[in-house]
Amino acid sequence: MENNDEWFIDILNGDFQNKYIMGNIIGRGSTSTIHSCLYKGKKKYACKIIPKNKLKKLETQERIQILLRLNHENIVTVKETYDDAFGVYIIEDLAHGGELLERLASRGGYSERDAAKSIHDAVKALEYIHSMKIFHGNLRPEKLLYATEDENSPLQLTDIGVTTTSMSPYKILYCAPEVIATSEAQLASDIWSLGIVLYIMLCGVEPFRNADEMFPSPYWDDKTIAAKNLLACVYDYILFT
Image (tube, rainbow, N blue to C red):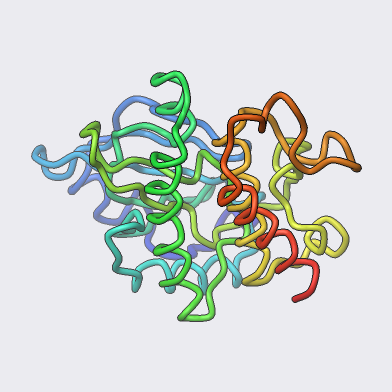
């Protein structure tokens, strides 16, 4: 861990404290915590804190520079970054509409029309970053957040490219085969992960429980042929790309 080496701006001796008031923890990842923070006593943002010993310095610096350039309605905007001896602090817009599957659970499930709207937003975000030759690399439901609590709120992609060294069994569920085999992601890997998200949205269980049946009964009995064909295309695209 590089305790005395500044990666961006010293959060303690720089101007972070002059701009922001750190608030309560509003979320936790496997290696990070997310706090609310108040900018100059006026506007709320989210502050993600990732320990430096979970990151690679040069890779993180490069990724942060990319994040600061992204500008899309379906991507959570990163405003600033800081660091201290402990960790990297990423200041970003506060998406307070909840995670994708949280909203699904609160509504008792998604119709295919609801799923289509959410996936359309996610695809637009991926199309934008993929056009810049950037992949997400860690796409799963908690990386898809609603900007507001409004019923028609856009879905936004977060945590693009800021990867850590840990890999939990839960994360593996969303990983493309090549990521599990080589730990190397690519653009197509994001499509596979999004396909897993869509599968779970539509039927409530993870895929590949039965190697002989992609759409097992009773989970898929009431789903349309179009939905099944879409997921089959995602699966085939990855296998033959």
